[in-house]
Image (cartoon, rainbow, N blue to C red):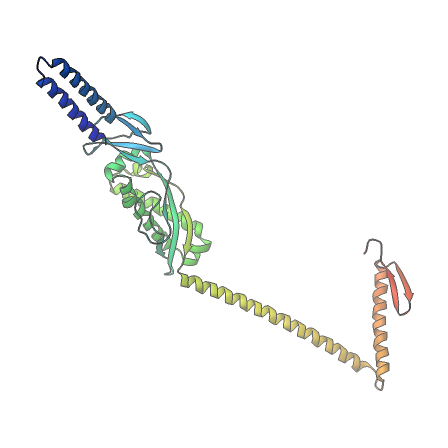
Length: 331
């Protein structure tokens, strides 16, 4: 757009000069007015092309007929060479997300591509859903543009390949169970370290000094959201857990049944021992009276113990069943 306005300014200036050159003596005044107007239009167009605005959170990198100019223009209004072209670079915190179904990514910020599939140490493919937050160091943006290209090229040629390689290299050092559960924090830290290393290596290969390569991006902790094995593995794990739970339930029920059988067996053995100890020759009514006397004796012993411990204060004997008065506090 700026270059187009500059071309219009050149045409307006040429038209003004041509008008003055071809104006006769009789039309000199009118030609002067017309050429003056064209001069004003040309000057306005030149000024319009020289005024540039860099939006918030960005820096501008200037090129002069394809040659990148050192340094950057900060956000705000600037008066620049009308022949400069400005390439904008975001210096805000940017999240490169790898999530969802396979889409290949389009290189735009925040749309790095699909979740990454990596193979664990025990040869299990894992779907890794994560994000890489980072921020470009503004003063170095001109060199990034010169050595790599515009921001879309930086995403496609540098950030996305390094991120995918870092995930695959890190996941290969963990079993799928550790990666998906107990060692997620270690996995995230290893992915971040490997990503940082790969980005710096690529920048050095592009011609950056080692110290400058480390300062080009501020890389923040990786946000690891999901690490999942294939569905058939998840189903097998779920079935195994369900089978283990069912086995534990069956063991519990068996233990309860065995305890109940032992209790009934002990009760039956006690009754048999009781009848075995009775003298022979007793009639059924006499056996009933003996059993009743044993029960009365057991109740009496229990009541005496309650009285001795203060649990019962008053006992009123009224026929076969005694009336019991408890302490006021219900103890």
